[in-house]
Image (cartoon, rainbow, N blue to C red; front, side, top):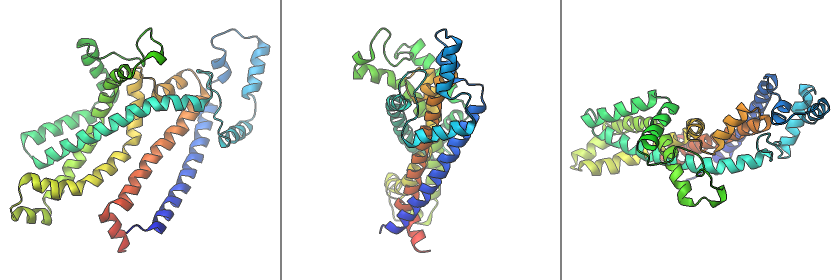
Length: 330
């Protein structure tokens, strides 16, 4: 039975932690960028020649020479009002840039997250069921290679094999060369999504595979599993009824906890495949000194990762019947 009072206390505690996290992140990010050599005025006038009077006007507009406390207070006030500033690269509000780029990244991350979860869980079940066989050893070697290899190296390898040598997929870009984004069809977009999504999904397979394998091996050595086996239940029936049912929720919980790794991997993959998502926007903002966009992406990425961890905590504490019943009996 759902205990709404416990859920309300849990969410209240998480909300307090979220507020503290965001305030600390805002303060630390602002201080780091303010102490860095990034100059928004120089970034803004990088494409044209400005007179000293124009530079002084821009400096007054951006508040370059104001005390750090004044700049921080103004920035906090704008955030509270929902204004993250204007991007120096795109010349539009930061919130609009994040919305546009996040839609592209969300499609990439959702496809990759789903594929990595399914492939990892299936491989983990096979490896656990075939423990100490050649199949189990092959899957473990595959996972160890993925865990030890950098994401950008795997992305470059996939790009060279499937795009350059085989020519099956385009090497990158969000739209075909010479085409307008409004003229791109769904199938063109899907064709260019396959390689980045495939790369990001195989990178995330290893963790869920090894975790599922270990959990299934533990379940197979339990008393209720051995009792069901002694009653004459066959191998697949045993795995389906007593194995998968007991390891599915922990695996889903772990998959939601991988949001931070997924977001970090997306930044590298988008940059290598020149995929027009939030990761590529973050790299461009850092390289071109777009302070408003960079700070906006930092805040957004923190919220995104925190939501993933919150969902994992909710599943762990209130969906898994073993955890819920254990806490109810305390």
